[in-house]
Length: 215
Image (tube, rainbow, N blue to C red; front, side, top):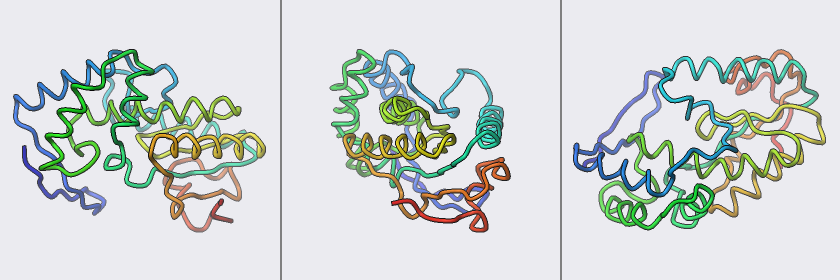
């Protein structure tokens, strides 16, 4: 196991964890024990369906945002602050409970990985994405009970709908994150002035469309 520096095409710098064949096999195995099935409440386009190329899933996410924002009175976009590093034992045990799995072998593997990769989930290996999705699906479900499920790509979320429902759903999302030991990124939370023109996630982030940072 080693950590390497990586720069995305957009210039974002990250520290990625690289596992050898035995380590990735073990990680997949303990993740499958913890999460034997994908949580039905998941709103993440990044996590499925299996076998669909990531760029098609990304395009589907953008299409979903475009459709939702055309019909919306209010739109809020946000993400989770330090998502992978913040996912700890409590969040993993709750996700495993939802999935009917056993979290302890996974937690033992992650405790070993922390000596090299730091706290939370290793960034890079595919099982980390599945684990993060299962954790955030808990917050998805809480938001959906208030009338608006987030349109999510990994930890990037968009809420679109009636003003009251969006406000309630976003509050429920943040409260659920807190219960999981996570928190949303207040510096990136945006409310959109004119939802119909915000047809993609990149447009949602443009300062020209920001009217406030919700509290």
